[in-house]
Image (cartoon, rainbow, N blue to C red; front, side, top):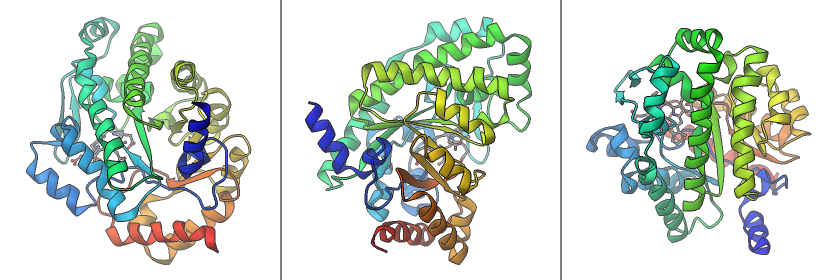
Length: 356
Ligand code: CP3
């Protein structure tokens, strides 16, 4: 068993880099690689009932996961789903309003929480597990033998932001108020999310996910002490539980905009590799990389712009970070206005970088 796992890690460059080895050229994938910048995604989207219908339809979700690979042959296939499947499994009302993003019925006190915890139903997440197993089969069928399947969840803090604010927010007023005025009550929400995230990621791993990423998109709005309590500690609980069950599955943590706080995260969150946003200077990224493999961090705005600026910065990233375990990615998701040709060009640059 150990032998076959070692062979698999050696064959798949993404798994190899995440486990601290250095493949000849940097493996790559892009956050939001499956999405609205692709005409074939928009086409399926216009024919389907809505975003959540696509997420919970394993056939469609598998097809969407495969779409970017057929064009760009990434080293990682990110499961098509969303971080808000967890509030959905807690039976919190959720809809995606076109042009406005997610809308949820907000949870703002510990009393609201117990209702949700009791309502948790894992069967509501099973279509996502089914998507993972279909993608696993599709990768083999379509000859993507070196592509690793990445599962994911939102980190407790980030998922809580949406659950408490009731959607996207500019000032995060409600979650700050609750977490600061009633930290014990707020902790019941975070603990609930830790517990479900472990169930959810385990379900994805059992179905065939070979690595997982924990998206903490709103980690950057916290003070130093809050970051320790609401980002590092909950993430460390999730990674400890997963490592106990699946020691060979790499976990990537992505505490976006963490700035100076990346350093504590890398040491204490228990992740195997860290995703960096475009705010991290390459010299600092190289420092962090002495401790763990890093992933990132091309500015998505440069991919939208394309041309020589994108190319120069992509090459600079590879020159600085490509000499040690590294996964090329963007600093955040691909913007929906990004021309497909720019993504094509970027993939070409990364792929050629090993042979220069
Ligand atoms: O390609 C991939 O990366 C895989 C799929 C994926 C989606 N969302 C699909 C999606 C992943 C990994 C996510 C994660 C996610 N979802 C995050 C963390 C990363 C980040 O972007 O910070 C967050 C915060 C969400 C919550 C979410 N989902 C929001 C706020 C929105 C609306 C904003 C928007 O971009 O429209 C979504 C919708 C969403 N998730 C879309 C896609 C392809 C667009 C839906 C559509 O087609 O209308």
